[in-house]
Length: 248
Length: 267
Image (cartoon, rainbow over all chains, first blue to last red; front, side):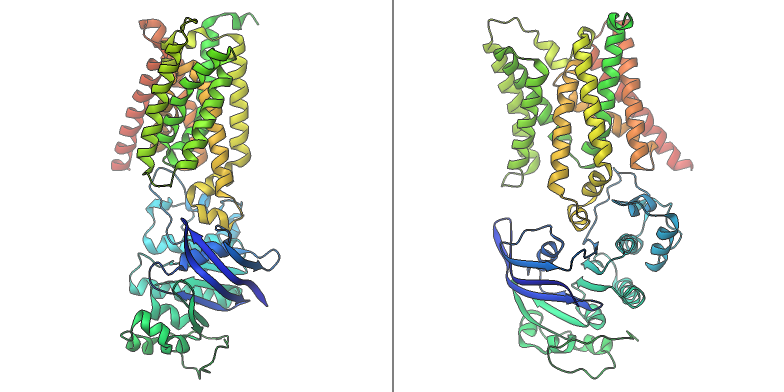
């Protein structure tokens, strides 16, 4: 089932056209990854999808009552606003203590409810953001560069958490990331952006695509191999759902 | 209503009303780093005074309109070239200068400029008091109604948008509340010190609070204490009331900041 579909979506930011003619969709339960160089319009597309940016032309169609859990790129907490984790989780909607405890556990950070937000480490902070998104009981989880500021093992662990969440809750996931090889391993489908959709498909298809290699080179090929699934990939543009995410 | 016939009682009530109005809004001014925005809006108040005197309308209405216009103008212009602090600096000082020049043109009226610059809380009338508490009720009501949405929008615009909260709408709520607060506060502390009343009490409350709600309540308490103690001190030492109130608030800020530091080191 289609959760969200864009048709001919063109988005402007600060008077500049950042994305042209984007046709994309996300189905229930799949993990889609947006990759692309800096300034390629990844975050802009996310803004368009969550409704923070009005389309210049084209449309964004969402399933009626689609619940989006959004984990932003960064959340600047400078200590001026006193905020415990529990209070943060209740913005903008209140949740029961049990629900909060469950979400924190699902996100991998139990027992943090009473901690001040600014006392959290980078990894804890991202997981608390994830817990907040999970409290919305999302059909679609959107993560915009959610592992910025995490080191490589931290990012890999975070994506493993996402894979677990998808497995347990069955929500679709849209990820934006620079950590190409880590992310791509966990994805069902990859969209490569550079002002428009240059190529898309399964991780294998995209990494072999000339458009992708023109943007990112072929230097990371070796790293991909480590994370590649033990699947027989059909090298076409269909997507399939992995039941297991084995990153060993 | 014999109690309200005492000018000191009226002054005290005006001070508390102003402090309560400024408290929740002041918190947002601090959280959203809008201190300069508050200053620019407050300085526009003087222009409102000049307009009111020229048109012989009620002062607070003129101030409300000028503050609202200034706030909306700054908001529209921001993000279009000039850096935010430069734009706000231009706006704040220009508004003050234009207001002073405009008042000087009103040669027909005898204007007590000091009263508008630094407040004249001892001259608060019953009507002023009604307007101040009416404004307080509107601002506090607005803040209570939108509290969760305002907090979410303060954290992150995109986070708010994903929860179906319009960042622009919430920003407009803050702007309107700010304009009302400026109109309410001009009598008590004057155009020059409204910014101080917005920023100092929440800054003083911050080290003692663990949640936004506690911080807002503490801000209201600190603002009220500053108003009453400042009023008493001004009466005692025959000093100007507005600046004295701000001095007391600054003193409380110093104490809570030191307590916060000390508390963190030992505990």
